[in-house]
Image 1 (cartoon, rainbow, N blue to C red):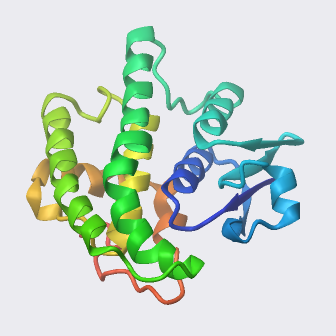
Image 2 (cartoon, one colour; image 1 turned 90 degrees about the horizontal axis):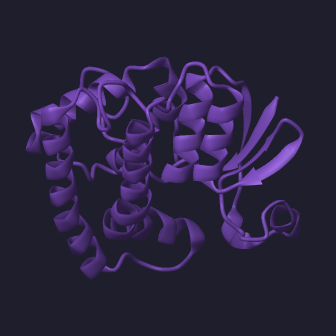
Length: 221
């Protein structure tokens, strides 16, 4: 069985979990307090970051590389299109969420509200929280524009791009930081993706000291 060293609300870990679950790969989840810099964990990944997965006898790190490895070794059901231009678009959007969205939104909201408390780094910086709350509006509007032209974020089929976006938004939804009333089309997209069996373990997460809103695990909002 695969073994994933993770943090429950990490969007990068969630993206890997969704990919594994969609492909029905059984995995043992091991919560890792990476900020404590445990020597055993640093031997698994000298970068000191999650996710780290043991799969096929290999220890692998970095969510993008892990997801691509899973896709190449377990191609069905496919989460990457066959057309080269379509594959580019999926990778572009994954980068959008894991880089731009993460920097402008996730790190300003989730990390300030949750990670600082978990790692003992003090109280949230209100300036960062305000910046994240402002930035997420732009990103939700961009998603709405994409979904107004496509069935899914990258095209007509669900891909890793949808999982990357859903991983970030689900983490923020856990702490009530997503205004689902801003865009009905984005809300419908999220309801559709969180209704998938692959999302069940994500919706079952419970973080000590943090209670999710009532709608978090409600498939119909």
